[in-house]
Length: 191
Image (cartoon, rainbow, N blue to C red; front, side, top):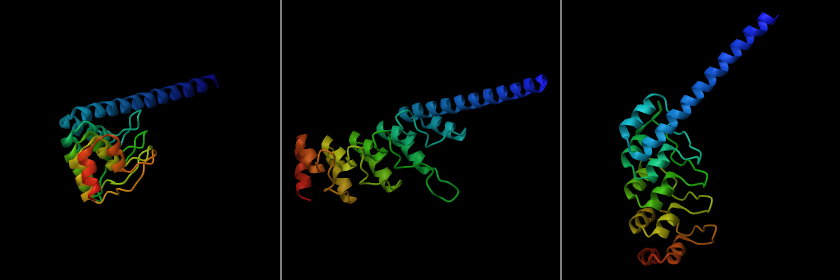
């Protein structure tokens, strides 16, 4: 009986060791993927995904590689992630995945002023143009607040809702007024 118990103990110990090694390596490959996306290292991103990295993995802030690349203006990585399709031709990446603040890749691209990424997320990724984050801000709120008139124009052209109010009870035009973004205010008043 003791011999059987010992054998069972060894089998369980080996199984646990394998489990933790695989889990650690999975975390490590994803950490490396986040860094590559942040730096815009497309070659590394491709290699990691080829090795089995999950393109929708999330870091401690619940941000995906697409979110990170969009936040840092890494258009080549964004384009590559949006080019990956499953066997049915559907996007593999979850475009409207939210972080801990409820923000999507489109929110951060609009907030940082990256019009080419905003266009790509909407036109190729079919991103939700009126998605609200935890503060109920839309991508239009973000770009209006920051004064990115080119993005505001584009979002309006794509039928972004100008009447949505955030937690402060403000519409995008009211956010622009609050931040002194006169060009954006003038443009939105004409809409």
